[in-house]
Length: 212
Image 1 (tube, rainbow, N blue to C red):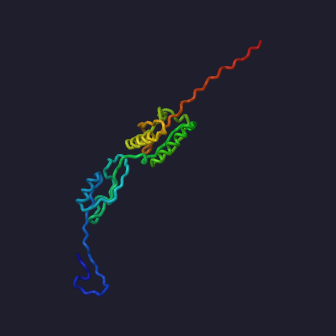
Image 2 (tube, rainbow, N blue to C red):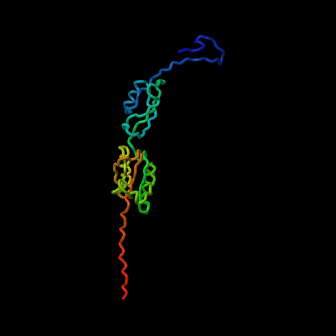
């Protein structure tokens, strides 16, 4: 819109001409809570573009809606600038830590826990074997079967994903997802059913020989 020196001015060869350029600006709209199709329409109306799109699991967030945008709403930027967004997605097993509880004195349970740990690791999550003594498996910690315990909706989806992985491998006994109260947030507990206790056989009383 302006220049120095002016258009008709004489300057030496190699001289500098300073230009003043008019830049159209736009205000970033509020995209959080929108779906991508809605966000595209809102950005187009403001002469802006959709930038990088990432997905992330966030507890209690509505799936397929935008939860983060950059720049934030109300920021003035050059027309045509991109706005990056993060979209909420469904929970996956990789979003949670997994604890594997089993009887420490049972070699079969230990081997099963290790195979399960490797399977969870391949799925992108971390599993921690947690051997426990017999007295640990009492009350609500006493599993009735092989269990995948969870406490929230997102954890339920991950527990069901783990159940499917176990079934598809064909190398594991059945595991059942189970809702429990007071479960640690962001944590899934796998309980391996302890083997039945071996009954102790009563010894026959020793008879004393009678003296004659």
